[in-house]
Every structure is written in C-alpha cells, then in structure tokens.
Amino acid sequence: MAIDANLITGTLEAAGYRLTGPRRTLAELISREPGYFTAADLVAATGSADPAIGRATVFRVLELLSQLGLIERLDLPSGERAYLSCEPSHHHHVICSRCGRAADVADCGLAQVADEMGRRTGYRVAAHRLALFGLCPACQGQGGQP
Image (cartoon, rainbow, N blue to C red; front, side):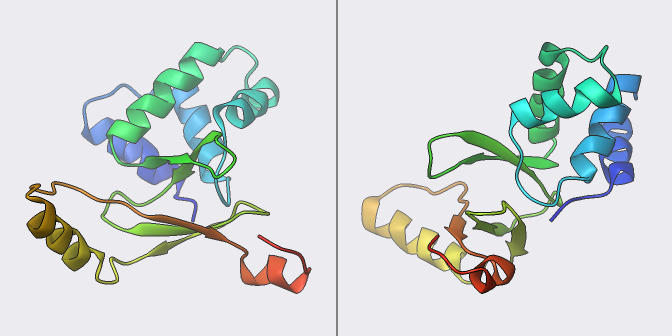
C-alpha cells in the first residue's frame, strides 16, 4: 500500500532533514508505487523524472527512508531485495508474487507467538516482522500459481 509523498516529505522535515529536489522527486516516485519496487526500478524511474539524480542518491534516500520507517526492505522469494512503502507503524505485509501489490495487515496475534518463542528459547525478542507471499485476488482471477 503506497504512502503519500507528503507523508514522506513531512517525516523527513520533522526529522530535521533538508527537503532537497532529489528527495522530493524520489518521494513522489515512491508514492506512485502500488506494491514493492527495487532500487533498480527507482533508478530507472528517476531517468525520466530527473536524469540528474544518481544511483548513489537513490540508495542513500532508500536507506534514510528505511531508517525512518517509511519503507521496508523485503527479501523476495527469488532472492532479490525490494522495498515497500508503508505507514511508520507496526504491521505486517501480504504481497502478491505476480503483480507486487501489497496489503498491510495488523499484528494478528504474532506478538504472542514471538513472546512464546522467547520463553521457549530464552531469547528476549525485541522485534518481529512477517511478509507473506501469494496471489492477490486480481491475479487469482487470471489463473496460475503463486
């Protein structure tokens, strides 16, 4: 689920970061993504939006937005690394393996599972996240396997 470019720029500003032209452009491009995207996708999109934005800038902005909780890094089943924009609150994702669309899902009891795992193993679980991959309703209608 894409987030609004104003949320991205507002969060950057509130955290004390300058709103440079490249950051604004990348915020706008990320806000248009309906599902996950790769750094390469974003680099390609900047080529038409603002050719002056370099690859290193894209990676720095992705890292910054990840630290601020505005995007989440995903390890896709293919082994590829991707990103997904999301609200900066605790939640999980259900992601379509075909079209890349995603839905945010509330905790659904996973916190209790993490607590139980901690009790069983002796670990003090500090965080958890879950990404489920499958076919969205639209792609299921097109037939095929996840």
